[in-house]
Length: 248
Ligand SMILES: O=C(O)c1cc(=O)[nH]c(=O)n1[C@@H]1O[C@H](COP(=O)(O)O)[C@@H](O)[C@H]1O
Image (cartoon, rainbow, N blue to C red; front, side, top):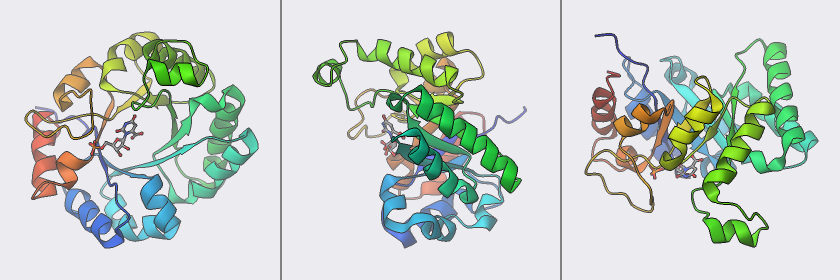
C-alpha cells in the first residue's frame, strides 16, 4: 500500500535546549522520521532565538525531509509583521503563524513579504497560517472584547478573510475542521492541535479527537505535543500514531 505523507507536527514546548534537541533527534533524526514535522513556538523561540533553532533542529535533521512549523503568532502593524517575517526567513520555516485579527492589510503584507524574500533568497516560500479564535476563548470572552458572535462563526469569518488576504490556511480546533473544509475548499491547510491518540491523557485540551478522526474530517496536519514528548519513548509513541494513519 502507498504510504501517506506523515501529517503529524510534534510540538516541542520547552525552554530546555538540550531536551529540545534530544526530542527532535529522537523523532526526526533517523533515516525514517516518525513525525512529518517539528513545531517550535514562542516559549522556545523567545528563550533561544534563531541560534537555538539551528542547534536543536540542525540541517542534517532537517535534511530527512522533516517540516518546520515556526509558531510565533505574529500580530502588529503591517510593516512590523513584514519585518518579523523577513527576520526569520533564513531559518526556512515550512509554516509561520500570524493572527488573522491583525486584519487584511497585515496578512497581505506578510504574504507578499514571504513570497518576495523567498524569491530573493532562492528558498521555498513558507506557508502562512492564520490564528483565528484561540481554543482558550469562549463566547463570553469574545463578547468581552466586543465580538458578539459565536466562536464557530467567528472562526469561519476570520478564515475567509485569511484566505482572501493570501494566507495558505489556518490553525483550528478539531470542532471546526468539517465546516472550514466545506467553506475554504480542498487546498486550504488546516493545522489542528487538540489531538489525542485513543486512551491518551487529555491534559488541558478540552475538545479532542484522535489523529484518524481529525484526518477523516479533513485536517491536513495535526499538532501533537505531550502524547509524544512525555512518552517513555517519544519515537515509539510517534511511530504508533504514524502507523495508525498509514504514514509509516
Ligand atoms: O497554535 C497552536 O499550535 C495551538 C493553538 C490552539 O488553539 N491550541 C493549542 O493547543 N495549540 C498548540 O498545540 C500544541 C498542543 O500540545 P499538546 O496538548 O501537548 O498536544 C501546543 O503547542 C499548543 O500551544
